[in-house]
Length: 262
Image (cartoon, rainbow, N blue to C red; front, side):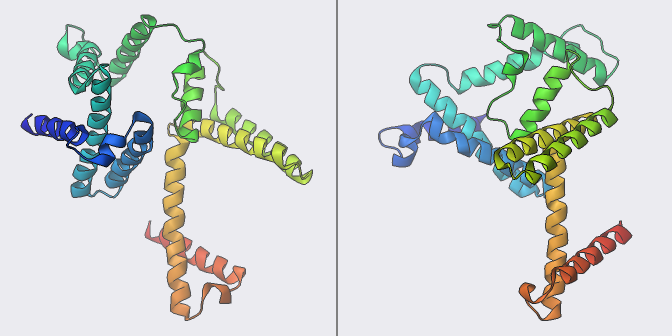
């Protein structure tokens, strides 16, 4: 706790009249992109299994919490103490099987109780106009699609089987093809959004987020493209000196090697 106190004191000093000009200029609006950036860097450190970097990135993320809490404290709204109290109270409240006398058979029952308590908490707040209003507007698009679909599914607005979702994907792709064939770019862009939304729903039915599936796809592409780059370098020629067919053949080689190793 001494290091937490030290961090809070450092933040207060940075924001003071004797502190840092840059820190003093910051606002909640200016800090928004840094908060998002730090979350992604934490996830990146986890994916790379870099323990040292993970520790550092968690510190950077904690700084964003402390920084925003300091700004709210200066407004007289709340401070870091209230932030910590809020999450402590929530954890105790939502774990009655640990801090109360509720008994559970396993993690499935824990989730049922968690969601029930969460809904009770929401009932005490101002009622939202829509079930979907609780999904943050600033979520990345694919993650937001996943959460919107999950909310709708809770009230039965959902396909019962993943094959039916795939049928919807194919329908949207056909509409995209039609828009492209008509050279109707604005409509094609709209249909592309429908395709991506439907694909996000496929991911949800498969038990994953389209965001993570695409991240995995990005990593696969990077890995295989680097294999193509190595083959191009070994050939002694530049990329532009190879035909697309030759590059595609190299891609297939890399792909085949990965599969044989897997």
